[in-house]
Amino acid sequence: MKKIIIAAIFCLMTLGTQAQYFFEGSNGLYGLKDNSGKEIIPPKYNYVRNFYEGLAGVKLGDKWGFIDTTGNEIVTPKYDYTYGFSEGMAAVQLGRKWGFIDTAGKEIVPPRYDYAGDFYEGIAQVKLDGKYGFIDKTGKENISPKYNDIGDFKEGMAPVQLGEKWGFINTTGKEIIPPKYNDAGWFFDGMAAVKLGDKWGYIDKTGKEIVPPKYDDVERFSEGMSGVKLGDKWGFIDSTGKEIVPPKYEKAYDFSEGMAGVKLDGKYGFIDKTGKEIIPPKYDRVNYFMEGMAGVKLGEKWGYIDKTGKVTVPPKYDRVNYFMEGMAGVIVDEKWGFIDIAGKEIIPLKYDYAGAFNEGMASVELGGKWGFIDKTGKEIIPSKYDYADKFFDGLARVQLGGKWGFIDTAGKEIVPPKYDYAGSFWEGKAYVEENGVGLHIDKTGKRIQ
Image (cartoon, rainbow, N blue to C red; front, side, top):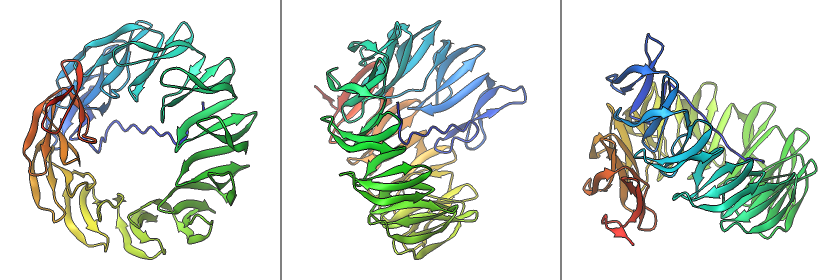
């Protein structure tokens, strides 16, 4: 199955977005420290993984379990293998069989499958007797195992393989597009890449071929444009299949705010949707445009340019983030601060980590604890949490002592940290889990029936 723009980056020793990090002891084993260097767990684990949803997989001897950010063993090492948590569930292996546990360590689905994947859109892949199907979070088989291979659901559709051919099903298991392709990708913006023979094209959700298979490779659609490859060169087509930019670039990125990064002769620049080179390739690396600005790298330092190519912030930072709400996080010597669109350092570079601004606030980490600042740099919510996420719908999820709750922009704990897992608020509700039971709550903390 074609997987478009999938990247997995695991860094064992520097988990930059967390208030803790794993370290290797002189005995060759791994422990956990906070950002002040204080030892939370002495080096005793044979292997460790990154934190996902507040929990990290750890290996003791030849068995796997999970710890939380305070170092507590939520799941005693007893499994032969585990995956990270996704949507409050993690696949675990015992012997040759796979099942699922929740964030409290409860076995929701006892190990009985030959394979189990991560949960996406409330459904996870499972394999039994050589065939694939899907289960929900209660363990119910929504789609009985009968396919040779399957992909995850995106936009309500999943690619499935029957025999040697690929098609698509919806979440009820109905075959919307019968298996007839040699390969298939996921749906993005209502379009999915499909391969017929050794060439790629695009179909819509009815199965209509919008772009007949004729390219050597394709990327997903973004702002109505998709990168396509012929030979070793990249160009762009629009959603009707018209070739807007003939394949001539060594690399091409998605469009963002009407501009796409392209690589020519080892250097990066930007084109618009007509294919015009607005910014000639001259940079060593580039980021996407956000709020009219893009990060660019020259030599070893990063700065910013606008859409005319004007350098608004000279390259002088070790790393830069995207602009959000008129502010961008920048880094020098592993310390974070913020600049405005004009390049003025509004918030000094003093934090161990800083998230993006959202709803006028940004989460920041200092000395292993998280709080929030406003756009003047004023500390609105003191750094006291083990982790703090962005504000959504006026509330931000926070973690304290391994439990999750929600605060408002004044710092008031609307929902005290008591849940084993909590997702962000969206359209007035948030998914939470307590003692292995999942539910939705409203912005007062009241359960939604």
